[in-house]
Length: 158
Length: 437
Image: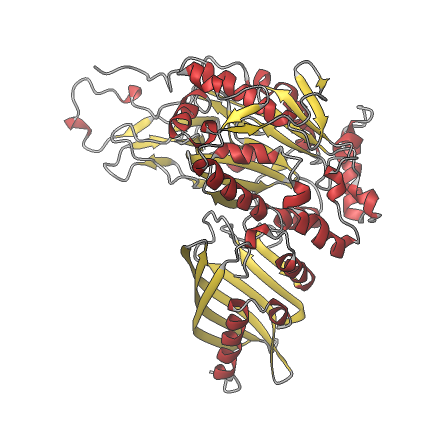
């Protein structure tokens, strides 16, 4: 174990992130990313993202476009919105050769839209870098257990 | 009964029962999905002998295979001849030498022959393996790598069925410098509570984007490129909505050159790609430019009735699940013999608008759900209106018609075909090798 890793601080960061998403404070959430940050939700296709279609593969400019849609009055797929409650657990962290933090967690998201409840679950893999007194997200990969299934609506932030 | 179905479709209106009646759905499986040609897959998905792909014809599970011995393609019903279990999971694919039923171990090769029966000597003296191969899809054919099958051995040839739609399959495939496209980068799957015909119609609907996709065409694109793009379906748009005969249909955007409108410069990899396309068609004046005009995503939307749509970089396959449940598989297509970044860009462009987390499709799906809710419950609202452009259509080719992009010429062509097929006498699903009495 690397003694420099402050696991409670990392957990607090992930819990805060989950709170921002559940409370739909998206602008604050986007600000957690580094300028070169990437948000990737792979599809059922194995392989690298250059050759495999993803459910979501956003850089920060595209994430900001996603936020524009969240604010648009014709964003039909979020009228009514998908309400989310997420649990984040089983957090582990390692320091990489580049001095970044490689962080894994497990998540369960309870979804509610038009009186229908569903669950999503999986592993969230982060690359975090130090920023100020905390962290910035350089990479956020959401590996859904349901990644090969058909979905009707994943327009909330997973 | 057949008359009843035909009466649900009139010149300018369609009865809600055509969408919401479970009996209509059951008849569609027999009279449409078991009677005409159905898209099953692309040859690049079965490039290697020993490949298989499990898909559906309507609700029926089927297999496409390329056998190990001859390397030929086969279309088979995905059900063991002993107790009927599927031999591969729906929508799975991979490589196998044999298809083995997990229940009692009956074993079939990829040509569908029954080659193994555990404890064979307990079968009766009449038992004949040669009559117990997997049921064959009677007609299997492909055009430019697109594989279609028909359960109706009396169906017209595939090329006759495709008719005026086949030149658009050519344009789609000829974007690749080799003339061959590839389906190898995965699939975006979505589903909705609603009827398969909603997705058919929506794929050819040039009336909805200005409102349903306003958050993309205006809000997002204004921030990305400095201007909205809703005008491509606006009142002054030269784009067309067309029926092509046999239910096939088109939205034609080829008159827009999006890149020149945006003033975007073409990277070297794109110039190289287009040069290769031009070299391949050096002897066909103007054709290469016609092909290249389809680049960039504003070429055309093509429906090959009943279950195949080509849009942008995408092969879209519509799977009816039940009268109120539909799955849609959108496969991004890559090109042979181009720089890797061209294909990566095609994947990212696909994710931009298609799939359940994209900036486009989820708003369509939301409309499908709301439409379903309304049609299902509002029983007093019986007829849906289909009259846009009815008085302003012009002929297109021998059997087609075209009109303004926002018109409903394509939809009326789809419904004419639907009524024609539903009025026909029911065809036998599949002729069995023998009838056991």
